[in-house]
Amino acid sequence: GYLDDLWIYTKELDTLTTPGETLKTSAGRWQMQHANESCRPNPGRTWDERNDQICERLWPQARAGHTSVFDTKRNWVWIFGGYNTYFPYLSTDGQGAGAGISSLISGGFVPYPAFNYYMNDLWYYDLTHHNWTQIVYPTNTVNERITAFNRGEEISDRAVAPDPRADHLMLLAGDDVLFMHGGFADNTFYDDTWYFNITTSKWLEKTA
Image 1 (cartoon, rainbow, N blue to C red):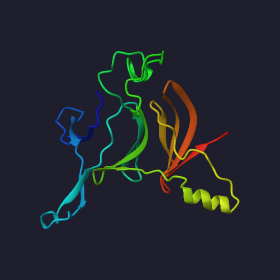
Image 2 (spheres, helix red, strand yellow):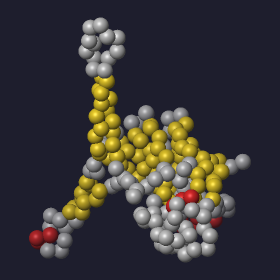
Image 3 (spheres, rainbow, N blue to C red):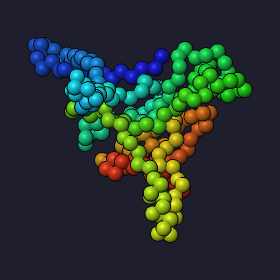
Image 4 (spheres, helix red, strand yellow):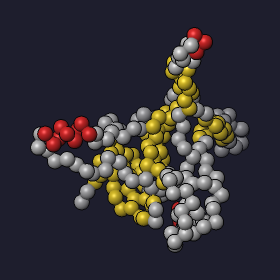
């Protein structure tokens, strides 16, 4: 099945040198990370419910085929996109079955037509505070479109974020820009290029 666990490997060097030997031994350890719960007050209508709280566990969905980038400036690890479906796969030649993302659509039924197999969510893991944060993309709201119309400005229908995909390329360009290219989804190979401005939290598609 698909996994959502996160592990950090810490290398530990043995600084003691044994006489007569030129190499030092090295060792390390793996440590599994766990989600921090974020709680906020949620008092009910009765006196007994006055101290009730809502607690959330913020953690990315299990997936495969996503990309990750280490952000040295912020000590973060970014991930984008990926693929997830029910496992084991159903016996059908429809989308989301068989070999998963490599399966061709050849006329069979789609087992879960409303299931989002491919993802385009963007997260970062803070290695200092040990918590995940999801980036919420800004959208072209109705009010923004009305304002642009009243000003006689062109109303853009361009996407505000890349389409969901897996097996794409992503890297950190400089200190404040994520560069993303290509990928695969729904039997389509992408050749688009996107930039994500970390400072403004906005995607921008690179056009020819």
